[in-house]
Length: 388
Image (cartoon, rainbow, N blue to C red):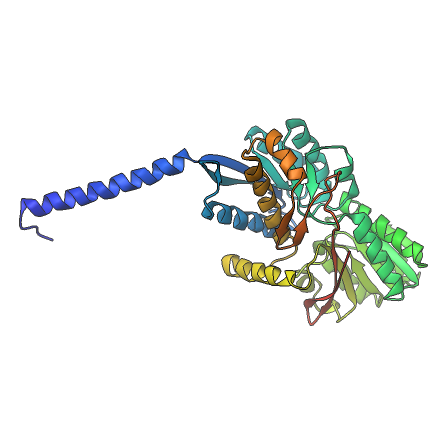
């Protein structure tokens, strides 16, 4: 392009300078905002990385929405920053990730996904005085350690396992029930509570076998249980193990109904089990659930999540999303991201989320926590009922 005069050049120079000044002004405005660091920890590597990524995406979605909302503490603009760590479902890596977030001086933590990583990490956050909300750890011990900053937004294993045990006997008419657990804090905890619920309802536990969260060969324990002729097999563990277990049950000719907690209650389970999953033979419960008018908000969240990440919600992305929003709301209510200042507001929170109404009891557990019972039809989860 050729310019015909110096005047044209000077006009362009002024315009460029104006754009540069505007950009500079925006940068200064952004830099003036108080940065609030929110930590998230979940397994984004390993066998259940699909669940960890689901959780992390829920956190990212919430953080982006908070920043778009232009929140302020009084006249001071705030900007939320997500610090995401991977614990690979390993307790040692989980505590290392927790210490890393403490060293980074995060203002709060959402996580971890598993009870086995959440519980040891909670000691580190408690010592540092940093509030923690788990979106999915269900072992009762987590909120029974006396830590004032430990919260969860889902029902615990006492409720989940007990409800499934009662359902196995009263609804599925199970009489001889076999139990397997993966010896993790989650798997063992939910299996024990299931046994209590089943026996209290009149069922008989004919055997209890053990595996690990990394196992792939279950022929020995399944052969032992087959001889006891169970009509229901309950597994305390995650979908990455449950899928291969269902395949091996089929190959051994075990026709018992299969049950599990929220760890198996994923959209991925049908893919992992393949043709070993027949319609209405697998039953599970997710710790949480909405019904009636609240379903509209959850349906919208799922649609927005799918559009943003090109992936369906696995299980707990909406609970992570709500946990981030709950923590941010407590900060806004307190006018501060200082943990000591916003913790009282977090304890007193009353929040309407996509997962339902959120408020905490004196232990940090969600009040009136819901459970959603599911089965599988045509390779898809099908909701049976929401219970409280």
